[in-house]
Amino acid sequence: MNFKLFIYNSTFNMIPLEHFLFVAAALFTLGVVIVITKRNVIVVLMGIELILNAANINLVAFSQYDSALMRGNMFALFVIVIAAAEAAVALAIILQVYHYFKTANIDEINELKG
Image 1: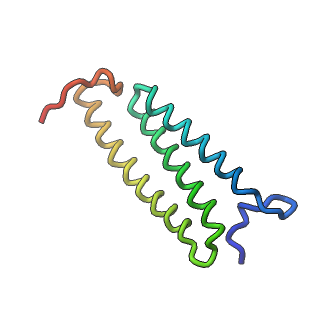
Image 2: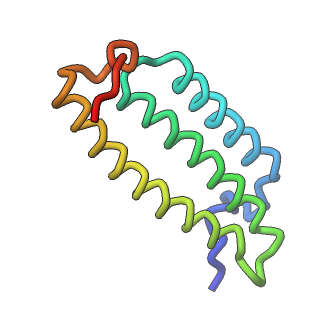
């Protein structure tokens, strides 16, 4: 069974690698812009997830050239697991910060206390 059905279009021609790289670059750029410009912690976390998804697209796109070992797919799965754990920990921290400061804006959180 061919597990790479997602990279074929309706005429069964391979989609060029450049298309995947362009989409990944656009997602990465959008994620960086969101992280730099937004002040809400939840939105910044979403920007970080976009950056990780751009890396996953690159890993899966390059793994089509290493079909025997599928290293890119395994790395992408690893990144997804790490991103899920990171999101859970980050949301727990955000909830505690919101409980203490009563805000989720990065600019308004100006002190750390133990």
